[in-house]
Length: 213
Ligand code: TYD
Image (cartoon, rainbow, N blue to C red; front, side, top):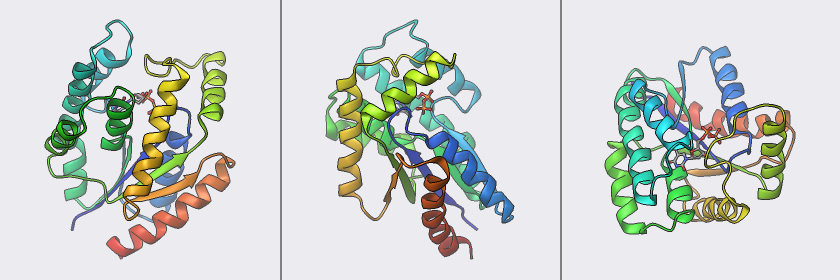
């Protein structure tokens, strides 16, 4: 049996991590085998790459940044995602290739054709079947992030980018949602946590039902 691959995407502060956890709990309550994971950094090697990317100790040039995210992904797919899908699990992954499209392509203005080729190479043939895009205005996301850092939560090098960078990233998600309507599902992330979770469940219920029933 093969599993089902769902990614959670959106700008920093959009609430996708909270929603991933709630979704995992809900699916497990129905005896569904769930793997929760994230990028960057959910393998032993990836944790080191994550630190290189986000600690702020080094500021990579855009191409290096891209290649480090892709190195993390390939390791992640081979070690974590592929085995979970092969055992039939529903994989809930916080960020994947669409984050690279948004942050490195739109945010850093790298070459689109080269990037698509590299993305496919890094995915090792495992692309998401469903992508939940948590749509939140940049202004709201920045307010949430400021609240988190005032509350003592760590921020990373990319959280601290200018508003214009976050706007480009956000615009890229809008464009991806429009161009891939079969895979993308837009979630109104400005609603409260419970209302957002209701939207997620409606979509995931249909998706998982089809594949695992
Ligand atoms: P993280 O602390 O995991 O933030 P979040 O909870 O918002 O996912 O930091 C991950 C950061 O890395 C986030 O700012 C998005 C960025 N990123 C990229 O720029 N490219 C990528 O391919 C991925 C996976 C993440």
